[in-house]
Length: 341
Image 1: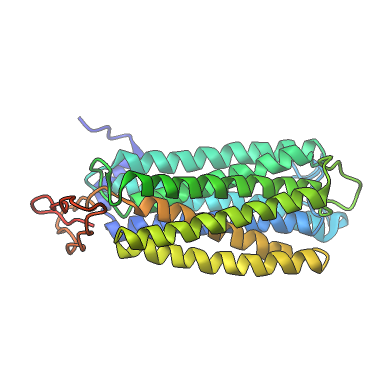
Image 2 (image 1 turned 45 degrees about the vertical axis):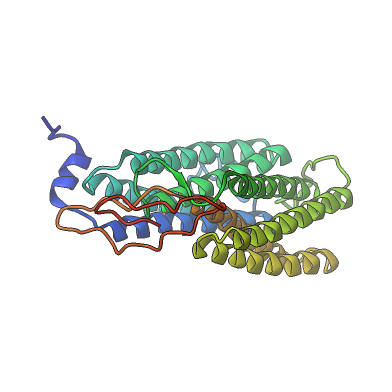
């Protein structure tokens, strides 16, 4: 017997969102995750990391910033308020995924995973403030935000596909190559946090402890990993063409090339121009786009069938069945009444 006191159950009885609405709600969480990364960077680049001197209050005596704290207090407090906006978007996604029939537990679990990552990162951000912007904790704070972005991209993808067992659209070595690209890009992101922790933008005008490594050397290592990511991307592009992979992942690799090209230009400009704040902020923005592109490519190389049709809905149009990835392989056949991708 359904639980009449369950608010999600009550909403589901009165509202049946479309599959398109659930996908848009998932995309909104991706956009907000990017916004949080960029605004968090703005806090550091404007030296507002300690704009609020404590946590969870802004000052020991005030929940909100005071006039004496100036613009830095407003920037730091504004970034804290954006956490509530992000939670609202995640809440809409959870409610929409829960209300839609048939119920897909995989989507609601991803939504709750996003929520708990946000809650954990909020507490972690408080610890960052209480420890005076410890660079190692700041780096972990950014990586937790990257984890949120990863889960939101996965939810966005899952909202556009079914719940069948994953079926590779290319051979296993090609999937492994895309997985290697994900790992290399993840390592590049981690190195970026080390560069930030050792670089001049400490997040506050006062003397803040930095990671004790040579900033120029760690930056060079970061650049070396950029070349690795570029090389793997080029290799993946030619491999996908060689095995006649579906058009979607090949197009996504081209999008990745565009993001990498823009990021490369921004990277060299910020290095030779002395790290101007606005350029560093753009670098952070495009880094999130690169990560999104890499994740989408990897997820696009497998298929989980069509989105389950809700009440009064029909399955979408059949997608093109990809050509076999290997010589002599048999083209996969779509299940009866379902579309294949």
